[in-house]
Amino acid sequence: MKKILLPLLSLAVVVSCGTAKSSEGASTHSTSVAKGDKAFLSAYKTIKADELKKNLYVIASDEMGGRDTGSPGQKKAGEYMINYYKSLGITPPKALGSYYQKVPAEFMKKRGGGNLPDSENILAFIEGSDKPEEIIVISAHYDHVGTKNGVIYNGADDDGSGTVAVMQIAKAFQEAKKAGNGPKRSILFLHVTGEEHGLFGSEYYTSNPVFPLANTVVDLNIDMIGRDDAANRGKQYVYVIGSEMLSSQLKVVNEAANKKTNNLELNYKYDDPADPEQLYYRSDHYNFAKNNVPVAFFFDGIHEDYHKPTDDPEKIDYPLLEKRAQLVFATAWEIANRAGRIVVDKK
Image (cartoon, rainbow, N blue to C red; front, top):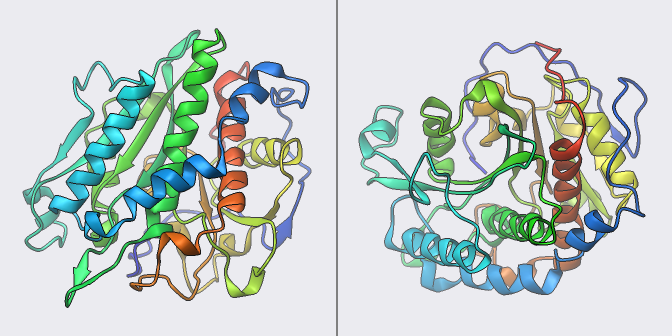
């Protein structure tokens, strides 16, 4: 997650603060994530702690050198991710013709990116069966802060945890598709670069979208979901940020998916416009929100190893990472398969 606060652009904030496991409010279509839904459950169960761990020990290894934007280590991590998608039979978007969307150095330099080299977003895609033109984005940044004074900052939680969660969620949707239960709407698995330097990869994508932003239903962004913070030590929880900023339905859908699966404690602390961290503006979902795309940002909090060389894979709570990844999958499944597109009814 980006450490430096972004300027607060004008965006009206409609929020509820605190912690909740359910909410009353906007009506929604009946959910598809009932416990008896065999297609859903079969796919859901493919998201496993041991597979998340296996991938994270590669993505956040010393071999990747801290995955700084455009670095050889980041490119090596990207190659690993692409080979994973190839092994599952998940292809890039046809319109792109490649898993890579180049993010030019010049684009980043103009936005304060200094002398960063060219880098790449990585995109994998599953086309929907009924409404393929409607796109659900599941995003995470795969860069971190690199190596400083010879010390590698592995970024296992930030954002190795989100990276491997997106990979596992993609596997779950692909398994459903192979079983004849693919999503009705299309799913774009978007791994963005340059987040730590200024949300550059997501800004580049939203400025040069492979699919029209008008057709983008939601961005479910995952940035740090493998640890806990001091305020929630030992709890089964996740922070959810921004889920009711633009849509009266997204938060309701997410809470229904949560209640019918792992029933984590959903914490809305960071939706408070007075919160000093201003996290709504600090990860890649914000570039979608600026373009009127509803977003939900899944986050574990600011812990003692944030942006330190001690953010290593052995410190990840893999069972909790599994549950949080399953929640994002369950939310995406409902949005992908419900009869109507979620509304954009807030500004």
